Image (cartoon, rainbow, N blue to C red):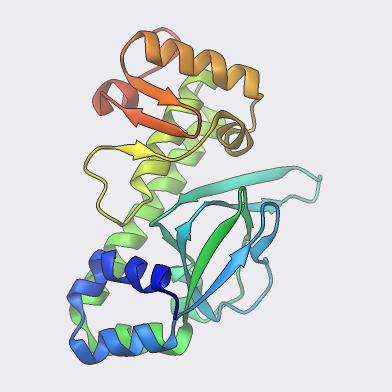
Length: 227
Protein backbone atom coordinates (compact mmCIF):
# COMPACT_ATOMS: atom_id res chain seq x y z
CA UNK A 1 0.00 0.00 0.00
CA UNK A 2 1.30 3.45 -0.91
CA UNK A 3 1.73 6.17 1.68
CA UNK A 4 -0.86 8.28 -0.16
CA UNK A 5 -3.50 5.57 0.05
CA UNK A 6 -2.75 4.90 3.71
CA UNK A 7 -3.09 8.60 4.58
CA UNK A 8 -6.28 8.87 2.52
CA UNK A 9 -7.90 6.00 4.39
CA UNK A 10 -6.79 7.36 7.76
CA UNK A 11 -8.56 10.66 7.00
CA UNK A 12 -11.91 9.06 6.19
CA UNK A 13 -14.54 9.63 8.92
CA UNK A 14 -15.92 6.11 8.49
CA UNK A 15 -12.52 4.57 9.28
CA UNK A 16 -12.77 6.03 12.78
CA UNK A 17 -15.94 3.95 13.29
CA UNK A 18 -14.10 0.66 12.79
CA UNK A 19 -12.31 -1.58 15.25
CA UNK A 20 -8.55 -2.06 14.90
CA UNK A 21 -9.18 -5.46 13.31
CA UNK A 22 -11.61 -3.97 10.79
CA UNK A 23 -9.26 -1.11 9.99
CA UNK A 24 -6.44 -3.58 9.42
CA UNK A 25 -8.55 -5.55 6.95
CA UNK A 26 -9.47 -2.40 5.01
CA UNK A 27 -5.81 -1.34 4.84
CA UNK A 28 -4.74 -4.82 3.70
CA UNK A 29 -7.45 -5.32 1.07
CA UNK A 30 -7.81 -1.85 -0.47
CA UNK A 31 -5.81 -1.14 -3.61
CA UNK A 32 -5.05 1.96 -5.66
CA UNK A 33 -5.05 2.75 -9.37
CA UNK A 34 -4.00 5.74 -11.40
CA UNK A 35 -6.59 6.74 -14.02
CA UNK A 36 -5.49 9.22 -16.66
CA UNK A 37 -7.74 12.12 -17.68
CA UNK A 38 -10.51 10.75 -19.88
CA UNK A 39 -9.98 7.19 -18.65
CA UNK A 40 -12.59 4.94 -17.09
CA UNK A 41 -12.63 4.37 -13.34
CA UNK A 42 -15.35 1.79 -14.01
CA UNK A 43 -17.91 1.14 -16.73
CA UNK A 44 -21.67 0.77 -16.81
CA UNK A 45 -22.69 -2.88 -17.01
CA UNK A 46 -19.70 -4.19 -15.07
CA UNK A 47 -20.24 -6.13 -11.83
CA UNK A 48 -19.90 -3.79 -8.85
CA UNK A 49 -16.96 -5.58 -7.25
CA UNK A 50 -15.44 -2.56 -5.44
CA UNK A 51 -16.48 0.49 -3.47
CA UNK A 52 -14.69 3.44 -5.04
CA UNK A 53 -13.03 6.44 -3.38
CA UNK A 54 -11.30 9.40 -5.01
CA UNK A 55 -7.87 9.89 -3.43
CA UNK A 56 -7.00 12.81 -5.69
CA UNK A 57 -8.40 14.24 -8.89
CA UNK A 58 -11.97 14.59 -10.13
CA UNK A 59 -14.38 12.08 -11.68
CA UNK A 60 -17.91 12.14 -13.03
CA UNK A 61 -20.62 9.50 -13.09
CA UNK A 62 -22.53 9.65 -16.35
CA UNK A 63 -24.58 7.60 -18.78
CA UNK A 64 -25.05 7.77 -22.53
CA UNK A 65 -28.71 7.82 -23.59
CA UNK A 66 -30.06 5.98 -26.62
CA UNK A 67 -30.13 9.36 -28.40
CA UNK A 68 -26.39 9.76 -27.86
CA UNK A 69 -26.71 12.41 -25.15
CA UNK A 70 -24.45 12.18 -22.11
CA UNK A 71 -26.19 12.82 -18.81
CA UNK A 72 -24.02 13.53 -15.76
CA UNK A 73 -25.40 12.19 -12.49
CA UNK A 74 -22.65 13.20 -10.11
CA UNK A 75 -19.26 14.81 -9.85
CA UNK A 76 -16.97 13.39 -7.18
CA UNK A 77 -13.99 15.31 -5.88
CA UNK A 78 -11.05 14.15 -3.76
CA UNK A 79 -12.32 12.57 -0.55
CA UNK A 80 -15.61 11.42 -2.07
CA UNK A 81 -16.91 7.87 -2.43
CA UNK A 82 -19.33 6.33 -4.89
CA UNK A 83 -20.98 3.09 -5.90
CA UNK A 84 -22.10 1.92 -2.47
CA UNK A 85 -25.64 1.19 -3.66
CA UNK A 86 -24.58 -1.18 -6.44
CA UNK A 87 -21.95 -2.81 -4.24
CA UNK A 88 -24.46 -3.32 -1.45
CA UNK A 89 -27.04 -4.86 -3.79
CA UNK A 90 -24.53 -6.90 -5.77
CA UNK A 91 -25.83 -5.50 -9.06
CA UNK A 92 -24.19 -4.26 -12.25
CA UNK A 93 -22.94 -0.69 -12.33
CA UNK A 94 -25.45 1.74 -13.81
CA UNK A 95 -23.01 4.50 -14.77
CA UNK A 96 -19.69 5.07 -16.43
CA UNK A 97 -17.28 6.78 -14.05
CA UNK A 98 -14.74 8.84 -15.99
CA UNK A 99 -11.73 10.83 -14.76
CA UNK A 100 -11.91 14.51 -15.71
CA UNK A 101 -8.26 14.93 -14.74
CA UNK A 102 -5.47 12.53 -13.79
CA UNK A 103 -6.83 10.83 -10.68
CA UNK A 104 -5.78 8.29 -8.08
CA UNK A 105 -8.59 5.97 -7.08
CA UNK A 106 -9.05 3.68 -4.07
CA UNK A 107 -10.91 0.39 -4.52
CA UNK A 108 -12.34 -1.42 -1.50
CA UNK A 109 -13.27 -5.00 -2.53
CA UNK A 110 -16.93 -5.91 -2.17
CA UNK A 111 -16.05 -8.77 0.21
CA UNK A 112 -14.42 -6.26 2.58
CA UNK A 113 -17.27 -3.79 2.18
CA UNK A 114 -19.87 -6.47 2.99
CA UNK A 115 -17.80 -7.66 5.96
CA UNK A 116 -18.01 -4.15 7.43
CA UNK A 117 -21.70 -3.91 6.57
CA UNK A 118 -22.48 -7.21 8.30
CA UNK A 119 -20.37 -6.66 11.42
CA UNK A 120 -20.29 -2.93 12.24
CA UNK A 121 -23.55 -1.10 12.96
CA UNK A 122 -21.83 2.29 12.95
CA UNK A 123 -20.55 1.66 9.44
CA UNK A 124 -24.14 0.83 8.45
CA UNK A 125 -25.26 4.17 9.87
CA UNK A 126 -22.59 5.88 7.77
CA UNK A 127 -23.88 4.08 4.66
CA UNK A 128 -27.44 5.19 5.40
CA UNK A 129 -26.18 8.76 5.59
CA UNK A 130 -24.32 8.29 2.29
CA UNK A 131 -27.37 6.85 0.55
CA UNK A 132 -29.57 9.66 1.86
CA UNK A 133 -27.04 12.18 0.55
CA UNK A 134 -27.01 10.39 -2.81
CA UNK A 135 -30.82 10.57 -2.98
CA UNK A 136 -30.70 14.30 -2.22
CA UNK A 137 -28.14 14.75 -5.00
CA UNK A 138 -30.36 12.91 -7.47
CA UNK A 139 -33.32 15.10 -6.54
CA UNK A 140 -31.12 18.18 -6.96
CA UNK A 141 -30.07 16.97 -10.41
CA UNK A 142 -33.70 16.60 -11.45
CA UNK A 143 -34.25 20.19 -10.37
CA UNK A 144 -31.10 21.31 -12.18
CA UNK A 145 -32.07 19.58 -15.43
CA UNK A 146 -35.71 20.62 -15.51
CA UNK A 147 -36.36 23.68 -13.42
CA UNK A 148 -33.45 26.08 -13.13
CA UNK A 149 -31.66 28.54 -15.38
CA UNK A 150 -28.05 28.04 -16.46
CA UNK A 151 -26.50 30.35 -13.83
CA UNK A 152 -28.37 28.58 -11.04
CA UNK A 153 -27.24 25.26 -12.54
CA UNK A 154 -23.62 26.26 -12.00
CA UNK A 155 -24.22 27.33 -8.38
CA UNK A 156 -26.07 24.11 -7.54
CA UNK A 157 -23.37 21.95 -9.11
CA UNK A 158 -20.75 23.68 -6.96
CA UNK A 159 -22.79 22.99 -3.82
CA UNK A 160 -23.32 19.37 -4.85
CA UNK A 161 -19.60 18.85 -5.47
CA UNK A 162 -18.60 20.17 -2.06
CA UNK A 163 -21.27 18.17 -0.27
CA UNK A 164 -20.17 14.97 -2.05
CA UNK A 165 -16.96 14.96 -0.03
CA UNK A 166 -16.89 12.74 3.04
CA UNK A 167 -13.55 14.05 4.29
CA UNK A 168 -13.62 16.99 6.64
CA UNK A 169 -13.86 20.20 4.62
CA UNK A 170 -14.46 23.03 7.12
CA UNK A 171 -13.33 25.85 4.83
CA UNK A 172 -15.53 24.93 1.85
CA UNK A 173 -12.69 24.75 -0.63
CA UNK A 174 -13.13 22.99 -3.96
CA UNK A 175 -10.26 21.95 -6.22
CA UNK A 176 -11.75 22.48 -9.69
CA UNK A 177 -11.19 24.70 -12.71
CA UNK A 178 -13.66 26.30 -15.10
CA UNK A 179 -13.16 23.74 -17.87
CA UNK A 180 -13.90 20.82 -15.53
CA UNK A 181 -16.99 22.49 -14.11
CA UNK A 182 -18.16 23.22 -17.66
CA UNK A 183 -17.96 19.50 -18.48
CA UNK A 184 -20.01 18.60 -15.42
CA UNK A 185 -22.66 21.26 -16.05
CA UNK A 186 -22.88 20.74 -19.81
CA UNK A 187 -22.12 24.42 -20.42
CA UNK A 188 -19.33 26.33 -22.15
CA UNK A 189 -16.18 27.39 -20.34
CA UNK A 190 -16.89 30.99 -21.35
CA UNK A 191 -20.28 30.85 -19.63
CA UNK A 192 -18.69 29.40 -16.47
CA UNK A 193 -16.17 32.27 -16.51
CA UNK A 194 -19.02 34.80 -16.58
CA UNK A 195 -20.81 33.11 -13.69
CA UNK A 196 -17.57 32.98 -11.68
CA UNK A 197 -17.05 36.70 -12.30
CA UNK A 198 -20.59 37.44 -11.11
CA UNK A 199 -20.26 35.27 -7.99
CA UNK A 200 -16.87 36.81 -7.21
CA UNK A 201 -18.20 40.37 -7.58
CA UNK A 202 -20.96 39.52 -5.09
CA UNK A 203 -18.36 38.05 -2.69
CA UNK A 204 -20.06 34.66 -2.76
CA UNK A 205 -16.91 32.90 -3.98
CA UNK A 206 -13.24 33.64 -4.45
CA UNK A 207 -11.28 31.71 -7.04
CA UNK A 208 -7.93 31.19 -8.66
CA UNK A 209 -7.09 28.66 -11.36
CA UNK A 210 -7.99 25.20 -10.11
CA UNK A 211 -9.22 26.38 -6.71
CA UNK A 212 -12.59 27.69 -5.58
CA UNK A 213 -13.29 29.13 -2.11
CA UNK A 214 -16.94 29.37 -1.10
CA UNK A 215 -17.30 32.48 1.05
CA UNK A 216 -21.07 32.45 1.57
CA UNK A 217 -22.70 29.02 1.40
CA UNK A 218 -26.24 30.27 2.07
CA UNK A 219 -26.16 32.87 -0.71
CA UNK A 220 -24.66 30.34 -3.12
CA UNK A 221 -27.43 27.84 -2.34
CA UNK A 222 -30.07 30.50 -3.01
CA UNK A 223 -28.35 32.05 -6.03
CA UNK A 224 -30.23 32.47 -9.32
CA UNK A 225 -29.90 34.61 -12.45
CA UNK A 226 -31.83 37.43 -10.76
CA UNK A 227 -29.58 37.54 -7.68
